[in-house]
Length: 364
Image (cartoon, rainbow, N blue to C red):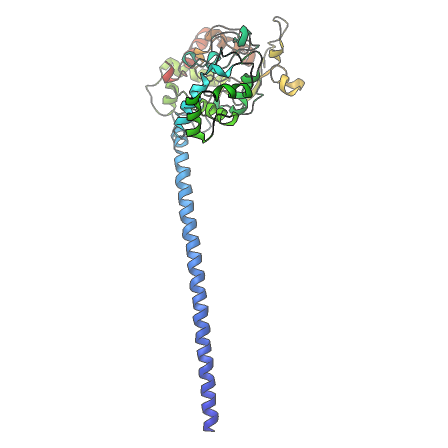
């Protein structure tokens, strides 16, 4: 009996040792699992914290815009803009040089800046721009300022973004009349320019990085105005007459199309909504067909991208056909053809004053 009891105790002891070894192994596994889980959790927390910080930095400018008040709620028609701060300054410098480089044209006679003069509101002041060999364009050149705020490029919106827009004038026989192959031969002969490209892109000039630099420069052409300062809370930024003009602008329906950050540029509209602009009293050309030239759809005939009104006092003559010389007359014509109203003299005057408040501070 004693021997049986001893064997039983020994068996229980062996089971206990095995259980303890199993517990240790199980405990070790749990420790490893919890350690790994904790590492994952804390790593995720750190990752999302970095992401949150990055998002916060990206949202700083939008937060400033969201602070816009002056009785405007978040559904107000015009959004304030501020200068972007996260662009690559070296690319901007290179892009500015390319924007003014006449080697981008076939005969080295014109640059982008010839049609988009930064000192003249981003336009050339001509009814039709002059290209290589003195050829005349077929439509009034729009401003280059604030183009990054627009949903499409050119009057007919044929370019979806700035990258596509750059290619347009390069190949247009009425503008720069060349190709990237020809341009790059010239640019790669410039040792100093090649060195700049190498420093920024680790590559000599090619189509992709040249366009990238020009686009980065164009993205920098944002022009906050006195009106933006008013939107952001500066009561003294605009005059009483300019404020009246803004109220008339909104109440009369102008802001239905001219709204958002660029105060235009984010939709297409028929030129002549209320009254037929093409009533036979003026000669029509292909450029008058607007978006129809892109889509081929009859409903797009005479439809154009709504132009920005920022810096509009500097960009005469007005409209795609350059048919109006003064801002006051442009206001009256829009009232008539787009809204179906004949603005009285005082209302037109005050709207014009408001529009002048949209000129960028740096351009005055």
